[in-house]
Image (cartoon, rainbow, N blue to C red):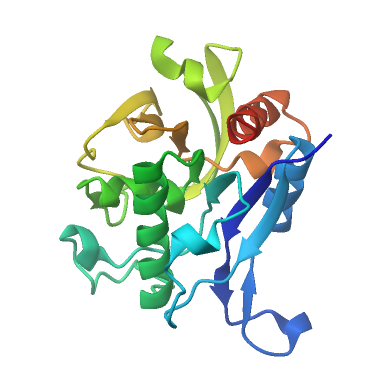
Length: 230
């Protein structure tokens, strides 16, 4: 079987001690989950050098893109307070890469799965905004959410799913062409289907946290990989 190649934009880290210096990393659990679902994940370097944002060139040979979780998007991108004490790990190079990659994928129909920060990025690209700091953070929270009838594109064969959350931000004003298909009990948007030429879905939760024990998380990732395989 030829595995679809899945691009995952790396995340900057200041504490990758095994690398001796600052690093560019992807979650091991996330990469393993993509592999288990039949894809071949490859970490890409975010950058601001010539050609770094030329996605037409850089995505040649890739079949899908996963926009992963990470630190906070600079609130300036959606009219929020950039000095809020809760905001962390903002990096302008990371932001520019994420925002431009998301915009390119959605415009050109590249199969896209947006996870946590990735969902926030897509929402901002589509003109939406974020809650800078949720009144009650969803950190280390496991909860069940109901899936609406329109959730079929997620590929989850159930009307409810147990999700693992780790976030202090959430969608506030919904971006254009985004349809909510799951909310937490407190109203937090947990899953959306995105209007785009190709398959595009966003989830607030982290499927990589529980994929090894929850087949429904693998179903989501398999649907993404299947869309990426054409």
